[in-house]
Image 1 (cartoon, rainbow, N blue to C red):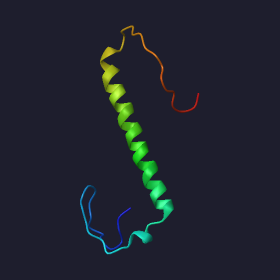
Image 2: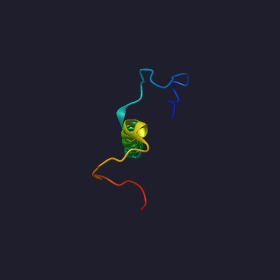
Image 3: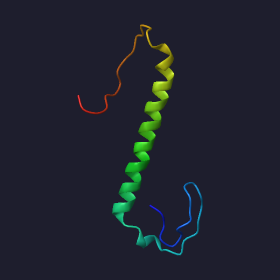
Image 4: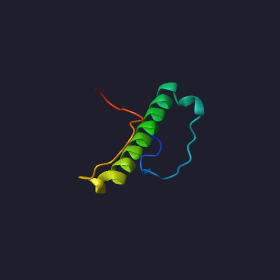
Length: 71
């Protein structure tokens, strides 16, 4: 979501806003938190995937520490 007063701001860029912190709702803060946690989980999943993709066909010994998604 792009700031309305800065329509040309790109992802990763910095900008200065005259908006007061009160203008940000708790809903938006919660949404931002969820997005950050989702990105961290995706990065963890990618790390594990890339760690083991080269071992396809091998027999490995492992311990399941976490199960994600529906079973």
